[in-house]
Length: 370
Image (cartoon, rainbow, N blue to C red; front, side):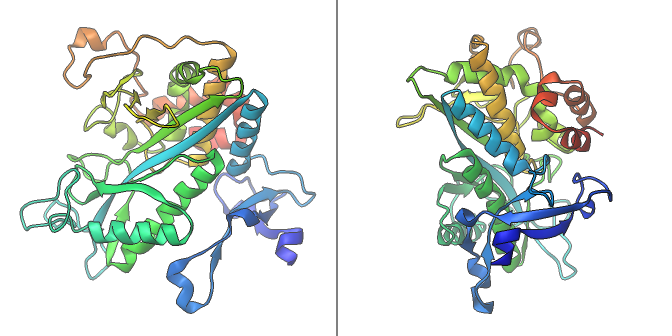
C-alpha cells in the first residue's frame, strides 16, 4: 500500500537522460489501470507488471517522463476537439544462439529458417517458417495479458517476423508496444532464440520497421486526416531522430519497402505515408519510416503535435506522389525532399527545430541530439 500512496523512490542519476547527481531523487507512482500478470512467471508466484508516472519528491511531475508527455499531448488534442488512435506493426528477426549465447547470423552461420537452403519468405507458413511457433506463443502470452494482436506473419528477411496491433488510445498503444518487445524477447529466450528489433540486423537483407498506423476524428465531424497528414509531412524530417535513433536506421531507408522521400500516396509501399485501402471505422494513415527501437511515447507525442499543427494552421495536403520511388527516374525523385540521410543530419535538424523545442523538454532533446 505504501508504494501506491507515496510512490517508489529511484535514483535518477543511474538512468541515461534523467539528469545528473544533483536533485536525483524521483518517485515512481504505479498506474493501477495497467496492472497485468506476467504469465511466464506464474509458476514462481504471481508477478505483475504496471506502468508508472514519475514525480519529484514534492509531487511535481518529472518533465522527462515520456509517458506523461504523451498523456499531455492527448489532453491537448482533446481540448482541440481531436481524438487520436494508434496501432503499430513491429518487425523483428529471430536468431539461433550457440552454446556461448552468441547470435548466429547468415554470414557463415544459420538463421531460424526452414529447409536447409531455403529461408521462409513473406507470409510463409509452417513447415518452412520455424518462427511460427514463437509467434503463436507471443500472441497467446499477450492475450493472457489482455493485449490482443491483430495479425502475425513471416516477413521478407530470413527469420524475420511481424506482429500487428489494432488501434487503441495513444497511451495504451504505446504501453502495448513496450510490453510487446518484452514479451518477444522473453518468449524467444525460452525457445533458445534471440529476438533482434534493431533497424538493420543483416546488411543485405530487409531492415526492421515499426509502421505506425494513425487515425483521428474531430468532435464536430469534420474530416481532419488530410490536415493531420500534412502536418506530419511538414515536421517529419525534424522529428526523425526520435523515430530512428541509430546510425544503421538510416541504412534502412530507401530499400526493401522502407521510405526515403517525404511523400504520401494510396497503396504504394515506397511512400513515407501510405493510405491503405480499408473499410470500417477508421480511415488510417500508415507512417513507414520509424523503427522498433524508438520510444513509442515520444513517437506518438510528436505525431500528435505535428498533426495538431496541421489542423491549427489548416495545412493543405500536397498532391499524392503516385510513383514508385524504387524505380522512378532521378528527375522525378528530385522533386521531393528526403528524410535525413545520416544520424548526424537528423540530430542537427532536431536540435535547431522550433517545433521540437516547443513540445519536448530540453533534457530529452539533448539526450537525442548530442
